[in-house]
Amino acid sequence: MKKTNKRPGNQSPVSEPPVGSFYNVDGHRLFLDRSGTGSPAVVFLPAAGMVGLDYLNIHGKISQRTTSVIYDRAGTGWSDQMKLPRSALEVTDELRSLLHTAGVPAPYLLVGHSLGGLYAQHYAQRFPDEVSGMLLLEPPHEDFLTQTPTLKKRYLFQQGLAIVRTLLTYKQVYRGLFNQMFATWPDSIREPLIDYHLRNLTKTVTERKNLNSELYDEVGKGGDLPDIPLIVYTGMGIDPFMSPVVSQSFLREMIDPFNSVKMITYEKLANSVPRGEHRILKNAGHTTIHTDCPNEVVEAIWNLLDLSETHVEIYN
Image (tube, rainbow, N blue to C red; front, top):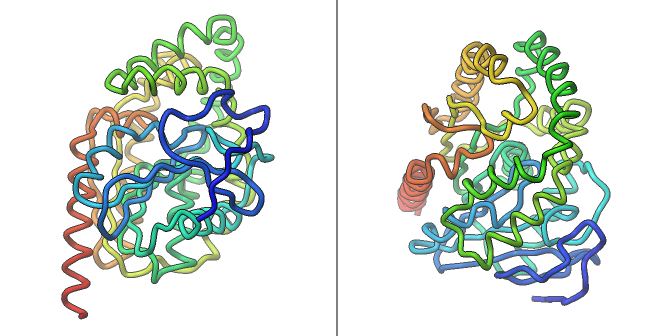
């Protein structure tokens, strides 16, 4: 297990992380925090622009029962700088090497949020024997491209107009949103975490740049998901982080038809494996799904752990 104290690149936080360790993977310093003991290890794959510490509330609860792992992909958070976006192949290779370097043995229960859910699926496609279960929190899906083209065009137009206004007051607006999101985080973690996000608001867009042109194709050609327990969550609430860049009237107008598309898409995704299940969270926003409904997210992980253990007992 090789750790390093090398200082990160210019786009990484200037301070050392308040928890966790660094591991050298292919010449890059990557942040990872491991808590608890037991197997399978629960591994969190953050959404685009988000980092491991954003899931600290769930991480702490999961570690009471089994090993819980949060980490930052290269180019994000406290890990070393790297040019973004990256392919799913690069990200899944990196995660696998990091877990091996950090001494976290398979099998893994993958918790993928948004873009992280796409990476989780590709990991399961490539390394099916290493994945015992999967929880997907509103992952991207190529069906959104064909099912919501009009909404997407109007959203981009609305976003372009609002970004100009938001840039003038973004620190104040987003600091308030992050303070609310991380209200229960310890001060020693909340403040550097918010500071990081305020300095890296464009990471979300940058990490997703190759979503339509590359990532969907990688996952589409990756084959079927393995026969593992799977839960897919749909959040039906308005994402508070959309409010600064999209008008409230447009958000209210688009949410019902878009939620209908999401429900159909995620139901199909859950049904793609024998032990898949689709669940709905009425009051959860996309970005804040794990802070709006933390108990439901934890419950889903418990359910997946139980199903994984039962499956292992049957076949032993």
